[in-house]
Image (cartoon, rainbow, N blue to C red; front, side):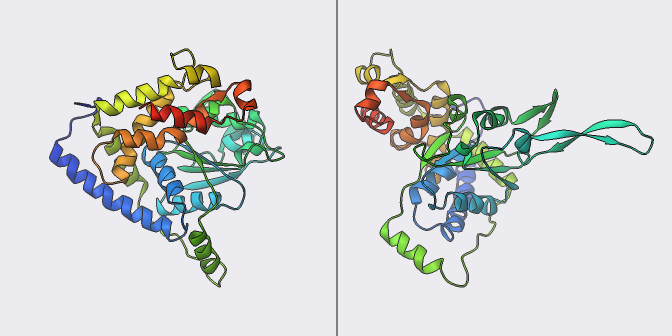
Length: 334
């Protein structure tokens, strides 16, 4: 049994034909990114899954792991109008959203004119987002959820598609501010970037220290990306996957009968986590060349979809327990 989201109907033949076209496009995207970013296949997969699902991603890792380069490469490969904001402690909300300025015409009449900020882009790179104050970080909240901003009471719609890829240094480093929980929940996934494998690092040494570096090339247009995102929302989802998502997310909330969760988790993920898993499992299935997601997709995406939507109790942190440990135990339950 499968569950279909209420979309315009599409025949099985058309679905297969559209999926084959999308697979060819996704293959070209992977090749385009792979020419510039060496190794890190899991990071590339999860970041692309977030974009194909139509959401935002938070890339977390120490400096020097090509987080910024990955975002720049994706902007070029996908043909998106990209803007970059370097977050600093003195950054103001108006530096992101834009502001109104007063102008005077030839007759002396004064009026306000809105000057759009860098957020009016199809792909916004929020570099080192946790170096800005919470007030500035929260300037992205409305844009990430509602795809428009309000300035001086006027609504301004953002371009479509609109994605935020934010990079973040670990909180243990100096000069960083924790992101507000409401903002973390807006990110479809948190993608942790680890140090590369030795062969990937060997290739980095050989190919990036010469006269010329590999350059990213555009292989897709934004309109085509939107078509693939629509196709993903039309993909059927087996009942077993729906039940796995519900079981996993609900078991991560205290007070739902899971003893381990009650002991270690202060607060758990809301329905937005279920929505994120529903979309991302479909996108991962298409990324792997399948027409429907499986429970294995739920297991693979549980950590990036849930870890930033949960908080541990003080006792759990004192014992050295991590959110990853808790999620790993919950995954075994499905």
